[in-house]
Image 1: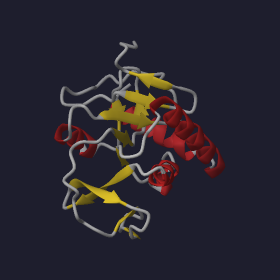
Image 2: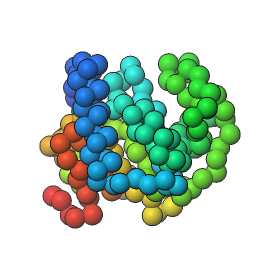
Image 3: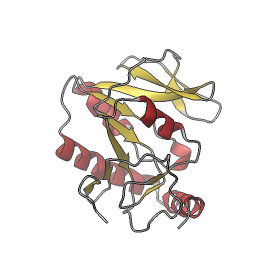
Image 4: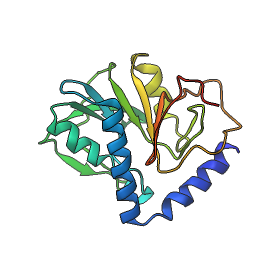
Length: 191
């Protein structure tokens, strides 16, 4: 399927989930992440803040856990049409932007380019690690600007059952996908 078709299909599937279903699926995704990757104190995690109105995977569960385990947490913020990385702490002040998205009040870019993991938002990911996002290209730009050793991890409620037919040469695939039922590694040549 084409990205535009997949974007529409999976946005509708996500909207059809109740708040409770989305939370329970998010919990399972979180549990799979922790048991598979075993994050440790001192590691650096880049984690998106979920957009409630889009029923995204609840990464606040990840953020609370990471901060409690002394894992450094960075979140994205769009400033002047550019994604910057802001380190957050237990006492970081958040505000709601004009799109209804919670984000740090600060616009101070950490300048960090090495993360152990980037937990990546998406609408869909296929079995080759190709992702369909919202179509703005912010994460492809982020992936190009950070260390190539960083593991790019998508989180999704749905299994990768369909292929993306219009993958572009500058699209950067994910390294892993975490769903409520499994963790897929795209290093193993899954077809």
